[in-house]
Amino acid sequence: MTSTRRQFLAAGAVAMAAGTTLAQPQSGTEARAIAAAEASAKRPPNRVGLASYSLWQFQRNELRDLKKNLDLAAQWGFAGIEVLERQIGDQHEKDQAYMQGLKRHAAINGLDLYGMATHQTFLTADPDKRKQNIELTMGYMELCYALGIPTMRVQTGTWGTMSFDVLMQHRGVEPPPKGQTDEDAFKWVIDCFQQCIPTAEKTGVTMGLENHWGLGRTPEGVKRIIEGVNSPWLRATCDIGNFLEDPYDKIEMIAPLASMCHFKTYFGGGLWYTLDLDYGRIASILRKANYYGYLSLEFEGRESPLTGVPKSMEVIKKAFASV
Image 1 (cartoon, rainbow, N blue to C red):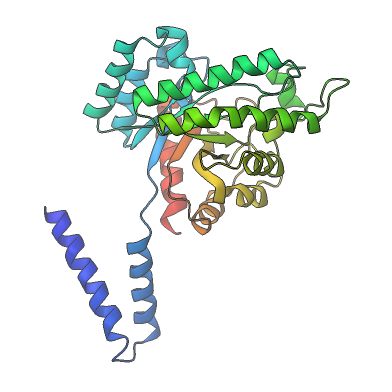
Image 2 (image 1 turned 180 degrees about the vertical axis):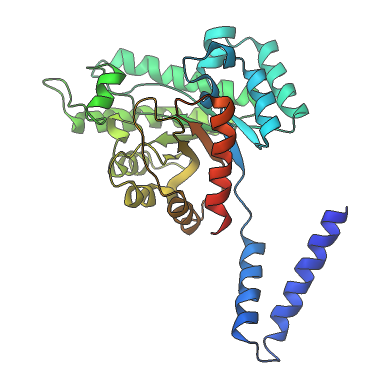
């Protein structure tokens, strides 16, 4: 109640100050203060969430349990968790009682389940495999609906001609197999996402196409697919660490399309690569794009997540404190 009263009085003070500008000349300092107060009142801060991948990272079995992830996220002051689907599917086979227990555990910790990270590939000439991945993606949306999750990370997939480690050695560049082309693949991927749209509409789950290898490796590829599908139910997951060269202009291209933002850090050196990112500059880009969604931390460092994740939270706070 006290906080609400203070907010009300502060808003009133700003309104009165703004009103006096018509009747009385203001100094430059006063005018700037009023403008800053008005801007602050209109622009709520982004909520900061934790991608559960940051803890497990496909290698730390002691941090795989999602309820433990929720406890740690609450302890560190995050507003919610982005669930890595594989942490549900592999261990619990999407058991309803378990999933509803996750919702309850999040609620009693005061956390949102705001996103789910999923994997699929539409980058294949085999129509049966594309159909299987369409059904897989629609099933993920039903899972999100059961958990009350509104946003889901999706990908184009890769051609599958090399392992992920080798793909990273090639800086994410993977030529199509002989006899196939990226032009063919864009048609397949757009068609597959279009077939997923009715399920997105039914479940209320917004898909966010991540700039993550395959046809999503470039901002132009991400935009081409989103514009080709032409539905509000397919947006972008803007990953600030997946453009390996000259990231800032590329982030700026897809930020206006974002339904979620992955915020990467690399304490202890990256698992596959390390980027020296200007987080303040990225914060300014997101603010300019009027991005109000979650900042979802994906910690990709070799340092223990138990120390690297809290340090990463401070990086995000510092980056957005001055924008």
